[in-house]
Amino acid sequence: MKFRELSVPGAWEVTPVIHGDARGAFLEAYKADAFTDVVGHALDLRQVNTSVSAAGVIRGVHFADVPPSQAKYVTCLAGAILDVVVDIRVGSPTFGRWDTVLLDDVDRRAVYLSEGLGHAFCSLEDGTTVQYLCSAQFAPAREHGVHPLDPDLGITWPTYDRQGRPLTPQLSTKDDEAPSLAEALAAGRLPRYDEVTAFVATLATSTT
Image 1: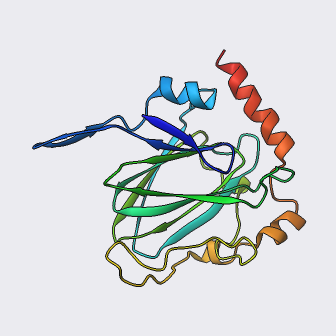
Image 2: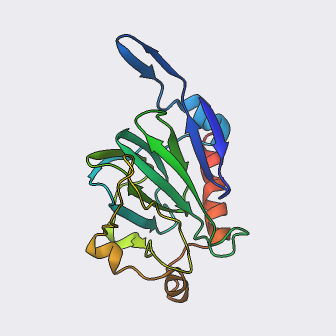
């Protein structure tokens, strides 16, 4: 299992070793010791979510209030997504930056994004199934979003699916009505970098 930190600090791409033969394949999708060695604390698993999406569906950009926020370990069980991590932490040196990882049922990579970061993805195939290991349970009152097509954020979304067919973006009503990054900032909805850093430090302390 190999970890690579993304250009958004606090997020990692995780590449497993896949053992395959005539029967199929086996891999370790998550390993607590390896995760803790890299991230600095254990994943406090509180909820597991699964979504199934048609090609072109965009989910996000989602985030939650800190504390406790909701860190996510994201894998694609079937199909493919372009997974996107966005730095929405006010005061962060990389505020507004985003990075992407292709998650699919071939390489079986995962993405871990720590507390305070924004998350989104675009489905590249009908029936794409995504699983999220979450560090906190869903709480609607502290869940927020930023519009994924915000031109100032400038995420480069895929225009074709895995078969080379044009994609038509599909958003939920909630995501389509989400504010821009600038509007969320002005409304005071975004997490502060110093508060996020202090909270994450308590997680590392609790594991020692």
